[in-house]
Length: 168
Length: 194
Image (tube, rainbow over all chains, first blue to last red; front, side, top):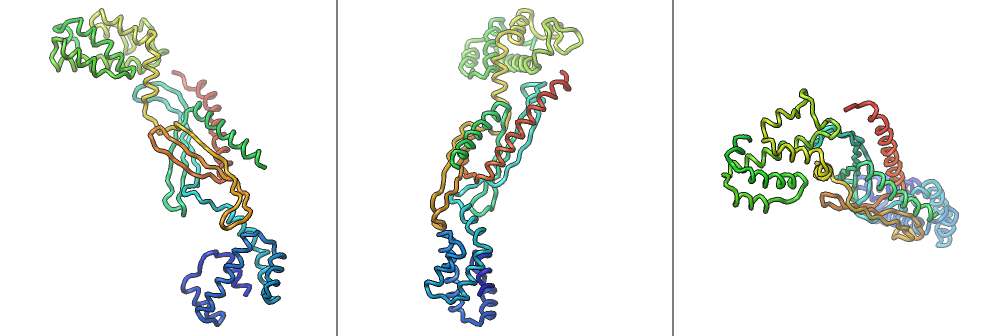
């Protein structure tokens, strides 16, 4: 039982066909029974995440619905190890389609161009990797800044930071 | 260019000169050129030669920064007044030098700076800070997040969410670039001489 729970906690996704068959054999269950067991465990864990339960209270709750002592204990111990991480992972989940994934930059010193010779102006190029939902095709956005523009951008970031600080 | 000026009238060339200067400053001169083309006695070919000649001359003159010039240029440099005289009649040298050295230069320089080839830069930057109180998977989430919307100079708009950790990374990197820029500006002025 506890091995199974650990599986569910770690994977957090449905099992593939082959894995299900292996589990069927391991626990000598029928297909429907296996599904029932997996769904029940998933449901219990989802509820635990939703209410951010501590392992002790989880065990208590399970016992109050007349689950066997040893099974409740197995749940509690699995939750104690992996529970916090799972809650944190769900907390970080966002609903917006696009998310900033990578940041890269380049500092150039422009010496000349077609209309002006003998310049010496520094330019910065910021490369922002914006990913869609599942991080496939990372869209790279290139933005160029002069010294002044970069300074203004930095001030805006500082304003955002001040807002974040005022939250805590 | 000289061959074309001599047969044509000097007044025509005088008309073309301010038009060329306007073009360098980035103003639209289709109307003025059309008017001149209709009123002048020059053929289309001559007109084309004159305009392009003046434009190229002025553009090259404006390309080199002011510090490399002197009003009385020594014979060694490319902008030898004798050479210039050979190409353009005496009367216009005064006009040319006034554009290159005089008060109107900053305008042309300003236009050159605006028109240059660059990657898109930020035209408009909007942001908001949200706190997610509750989600479908978490009753008490209390997670701050930042939403940014950037409009770039090439017309594209990008709206994306920035997790707080990534935001700190962005802030750190921008500060790092600023510091590097400052160091670079202090250094390069000393090393690279014109």
